[in-house]
Amino acid sequence: MSPATLVAGALGNALEWYDFAAYGFLAAIFAKNFFPESDAFVGLISAFGIFAASFLMRPIGGVVFGHVGDRYGRRQALLISAAMMTCSTVAIGLLPTFATIGVLAPVLLLLLRLLQGLSIGGEYTTSAIFLAENARPGRRGLLTSFAGCGASGGTLLGSMVGAVTAMMMSSDALLAWGWRIPFLLGIVLGGFTLYLRRTAIDAEAHEPPRPGPGHAAMRELPLLVALRTDGASMLRAVALNLTLGAGFYMLFVYLTTYMQQVDGLPDRLSLQINTISMIVVLVLAPVFAALTDRVGRKPVICAGLAGMVVFSWPLFRLLSAGNAEEALIGQLGFAVLIASFAGPIPCVLVEMFRPATRCSALSLSYNVALGLAGGTAPMVAVYLVNREQLDMGPALYLMAISAVSFIAALTLKETRGRPLG
Image 1 (cartoon, one colour):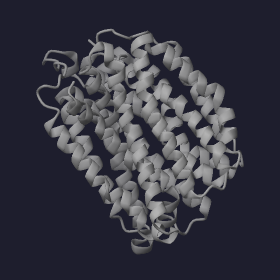
Image 2 (cartoon, rainbow, N blue to C red; image 1 turned 180 degrees about the vertical axis):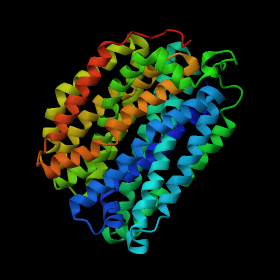
Image 3 (spheres, one colour; image 1 turned 90 degrees about the vertical axis):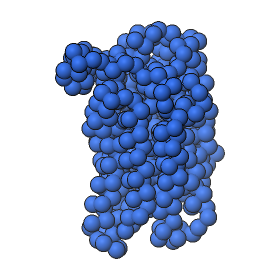
Image 4 (cartoon, rainbow, N blue to C red; image 1 turned 135 degrees about the horizontal axis):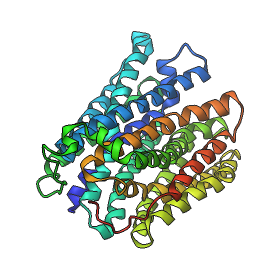
């Protein structure tokens, strides 16, 4: 696999998660600009509610782009999803606020977030499949992890842009117009992604032959074939991805709000801590993925999930201690645990399904889990901390979710080095 093909396959995830991260980090700003007539709690829960609503579109996006990927090729699905995400991201940066057009402002924001949820429903899984199918078996875990690294890189970039934007202007300027900058900059990342995908993913990139007219996957929808033949594997994939969704979005999107509300840290400092932690994930995820090419997928996955169950409570104790040093240590601990799971999981998921219906099966199961656990995680955390006054509530929630995924991981069959056919 050439470097350009590798980057083209992974870069779309950076675009997708860049916008999702930017929105999550600026949730308090969106609450004030689009829900100004609500009290602080209702405004914040409404902003995160729109964040969650976009995740509910992801299963639909998974069905749509899974069908495109299985019927018309991985390249077409990757091009369409990147184009949709670029347009909707820039459009959010141009949205008028509640002060300008009233209640229509949050309605338009919701519609654009739903469009983003639709596009992201096919991006992560299709790019992981594309990378795995073009990798040598002995390096499949490492190379497929770059789909997740693109997601981590996009979240990191969103955090960095948010931090720099907040540092360069006053709070009033950030509220008035500065929040638009991260979304308008999305046109640069999106344009580069589309250019690479049109030029680098060419005839040299391998795609498995699509089934002929007589194949069951062509006589009926690929998703229906997948549900009939791989239903048990799809349920297992849903359970595995619950921790990826809840952990990632609670720990690297919501925690900036948590550190501000519980620890009383300034927004700039919380964004800086988050950025450092994301760098750790970005560096360690490929390391853990490469380790699975040597020792196997199952031991690494199970160890990471067991760590989430055991260490979530003490790490959240550090995060709620009220000072920046302990908050940094706590989030760095979570960064290591998330990397140990997020690095290997793309390859594990791809290896669970057969080629003819792989996009449909993986896209739906992954996005159902992310819709259930990922998009709602910040909202659940806000409710537990703000309404129930449970500063350690997010830890208990994360421990329960991780326990479910750990049980599913115990049922995995080892797939290291096996052919993808």
